[in-house]
Length: 502
Image (cartoon, rainbow, N blue to C red; front, top):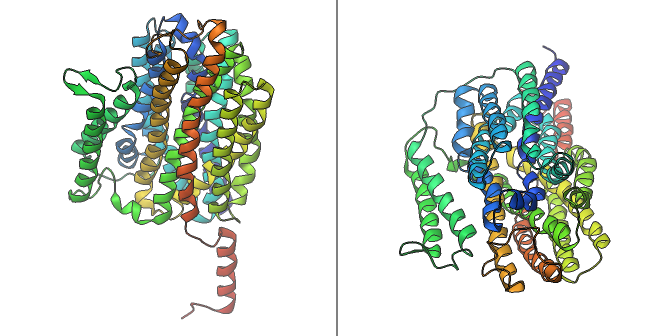
């Protein structure tokens, strides 16, 4: 097979994989615009309806490490199709849910399907594309993730306004069938490896992460006091952190040839820094939609679709600029693009917060929202390239699982953190509504209290801005390297000069 045919088939496989990947990433934020509608339809309070997203992100995040290894053992194509099937059936279940508890359970099933699917897409890129051609492919993959998260609210707003919130989930059924057919047709079967699975590690990882998220999100509901018998919320969070520390120690001392978290991955400086940065990016991008879209719907009186359109410049700028950023990565050090992206990210969030808190006219918000799109296009692709560039092929599945886990950890912590802070700021600014804000049925806030609601949402947005600013510093320490184009030119010059000949 010629190099041209090989690259063409690699791109066909990538585009086929991206259909399902785009769908599951949309579901990370699509519910944010439906929060008020679900709250009223299922008679759920703020905390309950925010668990609809947190449950998905948590179920998505916890098994990513082991599911990344399943692709190595059973083949990424087969594992991807299994995850896609679970996700599609769970979407049908979510759309048919008659209570908030049933909807949360369906979202857990969706998250498990998404966790099976996601690592395989990045793994296939690493296996099918040679290192010199991997930059544009990773750029498209990273940009797809960022664009999907941003267009999720737009898609949700359109569906809610025309068909109702249940169609946010029903639409995944035909898309899932299409994605299944495309992957079956265009993604080749790849070599597998026989590896043992670290069951104890899975239990420790899942337990620790669940305890941390549970404590953060439920803290305000229980006034950061007793949550279960004599157990306090801080004790739950500390217990989770201790279990996670034990998990890392176990990964260090165990003798398995395929640990769940290969710590040698983090010997690569760029991989470590990219994973640190992606946590902050995931936190911010998953935390922003809740206060922003609720402010638009409740304080400004927008419909779900109108509020989604308010956020549309983010998606437009991301989609338009992402291919340009992907191509630039062959010639420009990812460090500088990512550094600009994080600076713009934090600045735009603080700008939105100031406008909302000061009761500015909604039109002004379009400016920082547009800057968020520019920032997003400048963050996802460079981090993906930096994380995967130097990984050996035998660690492709593990590296993909770790990187996606870090991004999702950021997302689930962002959703949990924003839920806790929203409740705290609602309680502070609307003390007559509820002691914690958890029992407020969104959409039923009296007009006289909507200015206070706006202030609460503006103050809440400070959290993702601070996180983006802090984690963004890590990209400044990405190691300098020759660009792919420079390496190829240097190699050609060496060959021409007879360098390395025996």
